[in-house]
Image (cartoon, rainbow, N blue to C red; front, top):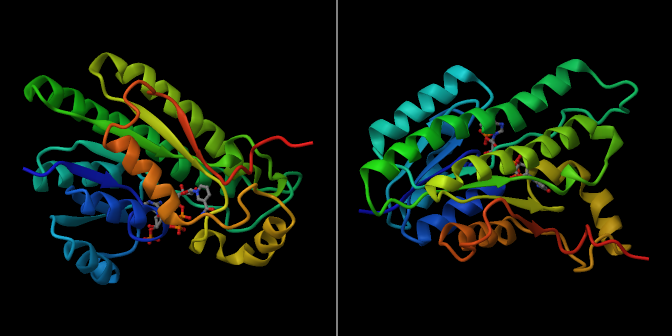
Length: 256
Ligand code: NDP
């Protein structure tokens, strides 16, 4: 029987790269996104061509109802789950000076980037604990895709930074809570990664990277992040629960 993983926001970008890596590693995979299943047929077919079972769990991770429906589907279709990757996240629709920022944007970012992963983890961690009791050799892990924005301030997207700072604490809370069950929890913290999320600010980051923003002078790729996730999932960091793995090309190294 293949091990199984659920990657939220696995339909494109970083999440899709993670799903591909896990499929190649022999995992049955569930990916998620907000678009209808008809829009992700090609993505599903590409992943399925790698040889394992791949399903789609449509739903807004920030909605209580959708999360319940997604977990029910995972239980029905897979009946077991080894890995949860909390990857889905959104940027603010508009970057705004915090002196003028809206409560709507704040609520949206906290709901999708923080409340969603927290309560999805609650549901799936409870299920993992049950599996741990029922299956003697069960191995589970939880990976949170955070952001350098947990510590690097962008005032014009304060809501995003605050949501990712909260996610960093979420990572620690679950690492502590699940330690007695030997279910490690990690945060992978990317820097500037080339995806749809950053496509609107390509020029800005091209310039900053050329000027030395990162010590490795290039954009990060979804594959850079997926490689770190794979190392964690396959158990290469067995004594490091709660840790943050930086995938930022050295952006956060203080320099003088
Ligand atoms: P993309 O915008 O490229 O992809 C976002 C993915 O999340 C899509 O699969 C999308 O689904 C899904 N999604 C969006 N909203 C929801 C929701 N409410 N419920 C469920 N799924 C949702 O993002 P990235 O790949 O760039 O980012 C992935 C993660 O990495 C995010 O958490 C982001 O904050 C983080 N990150 C990204 C960085 C970057 O530079 N790109 C840097 C640091 C962190 P659909 O296809 O249906 O729209």
